[in-house]
Image (cartoon, rainbow, N blue to C red; front, side, top):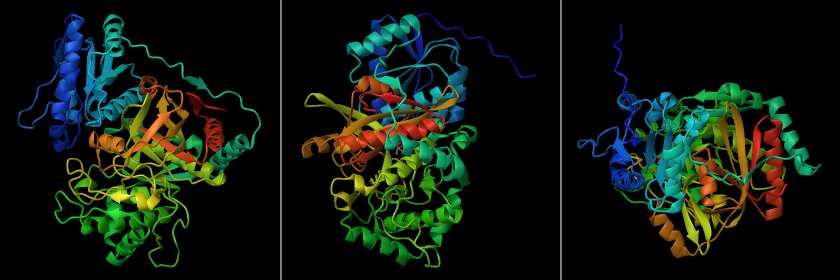
Length: 540
Ligand SMILES: C[C@H](O)[C@@H](O)[C@@H](O)C(=O)CO
């Protein structure tokens, strides 16, 4: 018989604190000082309310951090937490949600996720990821964030949570998609949805479940009614195909990129610098991904890259940004007889995020039908600060965007080595500054057992070069940056509402065209049975 465990009771005015971490030891050790500062700020703020914060798991001196660094570790930690205790999930780094979701699923007390509003490590990204995981599993939670843990918004939120077990946020910026008048965009959206349902499409997933992102897995039973089916592929097959690509083909792709104006910041130290060998392997991955996509007739593809591949070969980012761009080095079938996906992107969903896969596929089709640049990408919702009186987000995906999104296009794209903390085998990014312009932003997510889309308008704005450099230095300078202003959505409204670590964006040439494209996209999703929410100032 399994032994029963004694019932643990929750002490009064005490919250337990857990910290989910990365799976990669280097990332956990590097982010630990920032996590300590967050926990100190949170503990002091609770103390002011007469509450004690008790850490539920210790710092490990051998590992150099105090994060929960595996699902198993998470299960063990939860055994010692009284089931009814108020529980804080504190996140200052990127974290793998599955480390704690099992425990959170059955925990009976109120849960509060909290992050430092700071760009040093992707803690806000981690917070949004775990929130989205709990949203998908219908686990109730509250969430908050703070720059220095002394502001009224934060303290008032903690007071409310300690008194009621909940924090209420302002969601007055969200409304359902209303009945829309006849328009060419409405017709287009409905037609794109009809075609997808009728003819169906395939998204190819090279290993599902990247970095513990439970929220980024869309179950087939939710996905298939949209007409979208998964082709489950293995990263081993991708690597095997890379081995078949001759050096000359990869080198021709590199020559094409350099001809187009892209530069590579290369060196010779494999451990810390970007090398010609790494770039060659990355371009073999680009070619191999297109060939496998062609073999399986894919409409979109995603490479998770992490677990496994990161220890074998350089980062997938260079391949990913190129796949999402219309103009890119030409790739033929293995026998050289056919150009693959000629003159168009093969929409790629980074980190195998299937919410991105669906969004990118539909965006690609609508933007193409409207004669717009269909290049679309996700970004991490990384951080942000006010600049001259308005809040400007740092949206910064961890490696690459399609070069047409950058000021200067390929000429504005520089490839830097990925950070050894996350990417031991190196590889180059596609770094640059996203061009100023009008955008449609969105996110597909699972809530209440169904699919939802939040969609809004925004602008990518230009900031002075020094401000861009400051923001890069405060985050990851090797990654592409977008200075995003969300229309009619404040920082706190966005943070409270957003159900993903990622946000999708696509450009339009002017505001009126962006409004029209948003209508077509919203209608397409609605026709597919997705519940559409308009966020902020949106003209429909
Ligand atoms: C390298 C990092 O782990 C990133 O991959 C991470 O911050 C994310 O992109 C999460 O969306």
